[in-house]
Image (cartoon, rainbow, N blue to C red; front, side, top):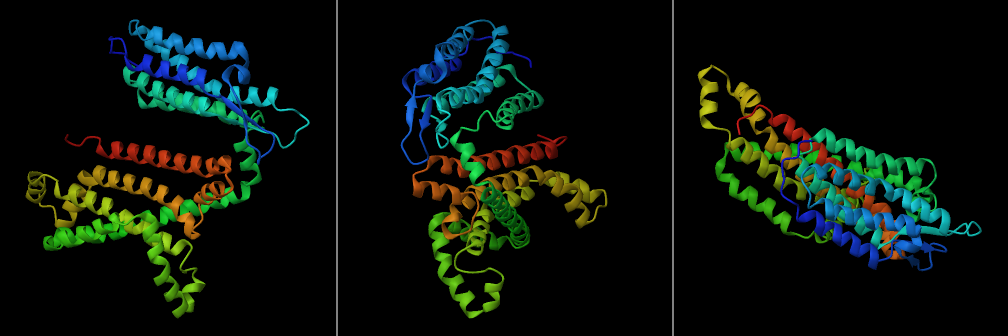
Length: 388
């Protein structure tokens, strides 16, 4: 890491001050006698005790002081933020161990607003310090793995067994695995089918330019339809088709379920993929293509060895946008019986059980972030050596 910004930061004291304000005015954790009753919020001082709570506040105030000092303090600030992030699972473990009575087997703990906002501001601080330190990807990944390891270790050691989210997962581990399987199948199937269709549509647009406006008008029209409305519109025709042709029912194609979800996901995925692929292939420099022809390359060789490799980073960017969008929309598709993590979200909303909502929402966010990181890395890898 090579710190180059010697100017005092204005962002770090603002974020640190906001975190202190949230910790002092909001509950840090919640105690629930069981899953149904409302939780009893605990302030930072009651949840962690004065020594631990005081150390947290002093650390954040220390960040505000260090932000006014020379660039050497950036490394100390970054170390403090990493400690803040790594202590968070330990603080929940501490709260669960000392607050929950041993004679209440259904009692549970949960993070409150103060905890979530501390996590939010600590992540923003980490991003700001990584930017100012010009941290490389290896350093960023290492720090991320270190923080994730702290959470994983606490779960494996059973220190977070009292956490409501962990209890929801353990009681729903079978449905959770099925939801993960269904969610991934829907996303991979929709993105894969969209990639094939977008390749065909792009070929039509590039070879018959008069069709470009008509094709993009149709794809834009699909994007303007709200997702829930499109799911609803597909129920009636698919129900009629499955009633008319029983073999469709044998394939699982009905008015509700995976079939309308898959069709809607493909319809939403086509526009970013076709647009990015078309623009990427059209933007390849004419002089480069002329040079390839001058070298005696055939049309197929020019496409496979010159045009496609140069367009690949932009095509992958379209794939990234489509994948992240499909992961989010698949959660909504649970409303029509498609399955996936959305099932937990809507069950939790119906039962007013926020832990069940989080059991569906957090893995959906994690999948989207993982897809973003993997496809961004792939786009950077394929763009190496290309002219800028």
